[in-house]
Amino acid sequence: MNYWEELLAFDKGKLSKDELIHLTESMKAEGGFLKQQADKLDLYLTQLGDGVITEKEFRSFMIDLRDLTELELIRKRVANVALAQKTLEILGKLLIKSAIVAI
Amino acid sequence: MKKNYLTKLCGVFILGLMLVSCASARLAYYDNETVKNLTYLKVDVKGVYKQYSEFKINAEEVIREVAAIDLTFDKVLEYEKAKEANSETVKQIEIIQKMFARHFQERISEQKIWPGEFMQMKLKNIQDAFDIAIKTEMSKNMKGNWL
Image (cartoon, each protein chain N blue to C red):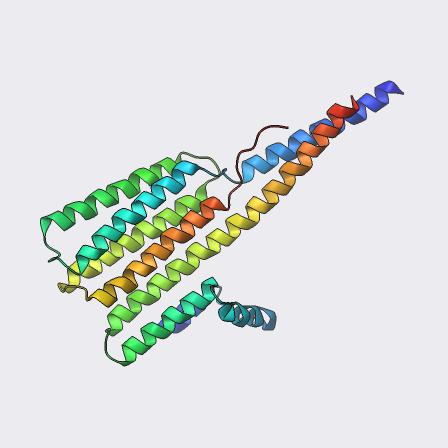
């Protein structure tokens, strides 16, 4: 498996059509995480092509992007759990309040 | 009739308590100290990266500074590990610490000063890593007042 395959095959599976559409849309979104990383990748490839950076340095940048992607995935997971936590809390508090008021 | 009504109310009350306790067990609450620690670390790291393009890397001062930052990472990590339901933030700090160590290793193994633009690109990546970790903490819920 070459480096690119290794980088892109996070789940060792092919992207579904919907996932691919979502990915390309996210890459176009101005200021979005994927757009920023795509711009960086573009810069690294240009610099590699121009001989400004070596292959070893390019690989290091790719590891940086992999780490950043992992951090972003964790951030999204936490944001989703926080939303669920808030919903449960509000619901729980409403039930307790209504029970107290009824008594 | 009244007993039946009270039983139902108790049921609702207990269900509410269960929901609230379930919610709090899933994810640690927002902690201002974490944001402060990460922000200060980010600034310290920035200072060191700037030296990567200015100093000879073997300069004892830089190595001492890197060791001090690594120690701060360890302290921040231990602080986060002490909290319950906080494995995500712990994992994020571990990733950033490894990235910082890897950059330092690359810098000393190459035995060459990082050109300004190259250093800025590396700095941008580690700064982005800190920003994502800070955003993660900010997305957590505040521990609110009860009722």
